[in-house]
Length: 152
Image (cartoon, rainbow, N blue to C red; front, side, top):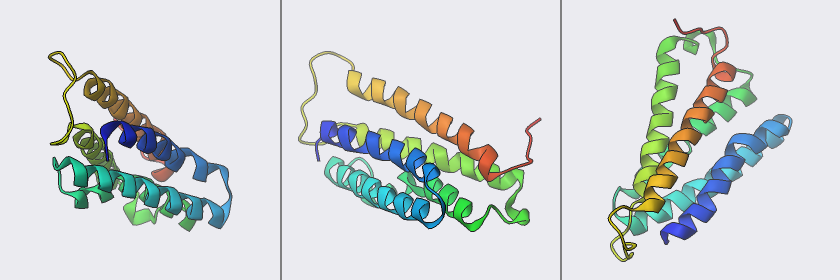
């Protein structure tokens, strides 16, 4: 899968995975989240397989925090023993893993041509967008997933 094709597919799927399931009630939100997660996982897996910059098995990290969020939202929230700072920091680390996998997927593959010039403008721009997306997704999801936890 070429990088531009990956960008055109992964960006709308990631946005859909974060927002669309929140609009539907009950079981339909979980079904929509699972379908969007499966599609996003497949796109990331195909890009990592073609890219050869990271093993394709790491593609599961690209959908892990979203599915944790939607799964616990469907189940009625976190159990009280998981509502701690440790698990909130682990949730943040999973969002960092999402950013890492997606940035590695944006690197040029072996058969792709480098644009003229010294810097890869697409990689730089999309990396900034990816980092902003992951940070804003974590900021919006953490209070819903971990109610009552305040940071000092």
